[in-house]
Image 1: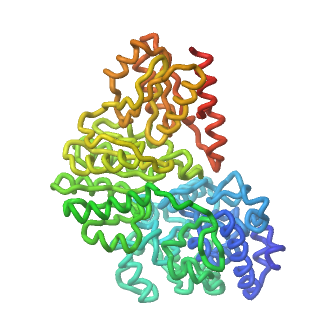
Image 2: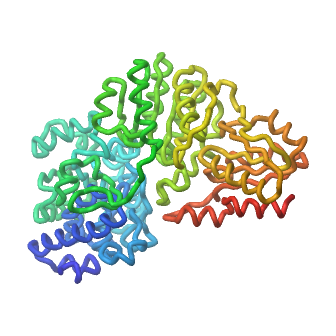
Length: 584
């Protein structure tokens, strides 16, 4: 195998075109080996194999610097830069993250998992190079879907008018974001493709950038010629290449959205090899709720920044939503501001995405929504500690970040009934902006309140004494387990409280607990610093009440084992009992 002899980019430069084409096939086999067994980003990597080979043939990494947007198309680059063992050796999968990572290799410069960043980051590298008088090539790789992000457009604006030195932007155009693309940018990309790069309207040229187009973005020889044209350029240039997302696997080519990312699967059938069970899921509940709600209420408008699948809205579901659906592209800031406008003009916006991406819209949530007290409902998935565990996609910071914005009501449901009721109340009310966290645990059922208009009213689910457990959201079930363990160990029934609200305190209830409780334990699925429990601890600061806050550390966890993490943090029924023993 040719791949056996590829240990660095220098080895790629020794190959003929024919050998590189064989290498492309072998890289795809290595990708199959890893992805069928541990999952990961499929379509972006399969479509960028030839471009990765051509880049390393023409440029001189790591002297020439590559920055991959999102870096979910960097697997072939990793294979070519000394990390192939993470793809061909099953025992070494854990050595390689799903994104570029400077700790892994000198060929990576940033740990990147969010989108639309590569042009700005690479532009900074170019400016740093220029100030030191060096001459290396700086190459930013960005997928067409990422171009809709504001940061990408802002960086293009600076690159075209302000840099005036070597800067190469490779636009990987596979006609797809995660879902289909939306917006005027993509009409222009289509014009450029159909005219072989010669369309009169060219938004890259409008930014002041030089431009070349290569239709055969999966042809190594053609890509080498294109990259050789721009190597050592003295001004910023865009190389627009047309690729096939998922190339080399028919199922992925035919269904690009489903194969953007995959769980472990059977190569012959494409079916998952992971058993998700046959029970209910909050994703299914959410999908059904949204489809039913928009049919009943024509004022409801679903807004997403390119993440419809965060709530199970596939292609068919999006068709059913019709005009009651808008995809802003990868533009969380715009999505939130648009939703504020929708609410202000009398309709009912529902913004859906993953928690890790909502952080990009913090300012718009604070300024455009909350200062104006617009009745926007924001529904977030993957907010839990055991959802997405890559360091770039953690959802555990959302509670602390957003629960401290004035006017924003943050709701944390503990059961299916409570979740649906919170959604119904939030969408229909006109008084508050609301953020709802989709539970990350298994679906449970329990009677729940219908209205949440009486803000910051906690619900006592079990009245007891001595110890009160206040268990927020999807950690409520851990509170139930801890309460049962305490009763079994000590012989008294502790109080169990479902706070429902993460954004405020039920001061009357907290005061009442002082009469026959000496210890309050808080549980939250988020970081403790600035989080829910610390607010309760601060409230009790001048009293004799002891408070134990249990949650996650303010730390960038990466690819951890969720259950081992809970053990280490003392968030198990057994360890909570031991903690009580030392206090009571």
